[in-house]
Image (cartoon, rainbow, N blue to C red):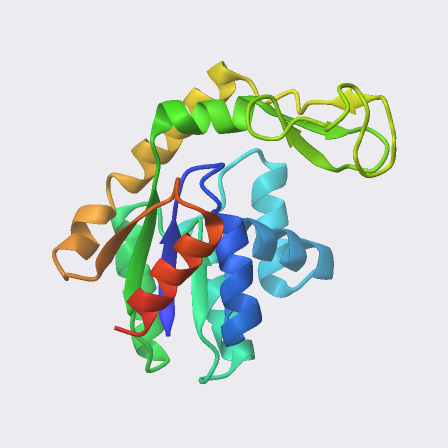
Amino acid sequence: MNIILLGPPGAGKGTQAQRLVEKHGMRQLSTGDMLRAAVKAETAIGLEAKAVMERGELVSDAIVSALIGEELDAMGPDTGAIFDGYPRTAAQAEALDEILAARGRKLDHVIELEVDEDALVERITGRFTCAACGKGYHDKFEQPKIPGTCDKCGGTEFKRRPDDNAETVRTRLAEYRAKTAPILPIYDARGIVSKIDGMADMDEVTGAIEAILNS
């Protein structure tokens, strides 16, 4: 099973990908992670990518395609792949088709976690954590039982991520829309796109994804 999992930051895509990895033994192929690993390992492709990045240029589609091909070869034919952050353009979608076909694979599903943008902004901007133990809270949905005191460790210092502000979140959402807009029509035409309510309970989202994979 080879799938593309789409969803803006904060939609829970990472959680769902991890659950698929744990339940089905699939591999999450994040191009950013693979690139960093190849550079660190100083593989032939990693060294090529490093040189490009050091020149301040964007890594080419050819390099990314080669990385994905290597990863698929290392996985073996029976392991499913979850593509994360790739493809982002029509050219990359075409390249992915060729990479998969060369290995006797095909793309089975494109699953998009849809969100209510205003609700997502509220979900993300309300997050804060205990500075001592990292337990997560939310202004609206989960306050400490005793105001100002962490339920888990009794800490009294809390922190927020600097990029968890409305302006940054809306910018990330706009970037996501711009990146997915070119590829969705390609897969829509094949009838392999499924949309799920990403604002639903995490377990409900997992159930909906399982239903699609088993259909």
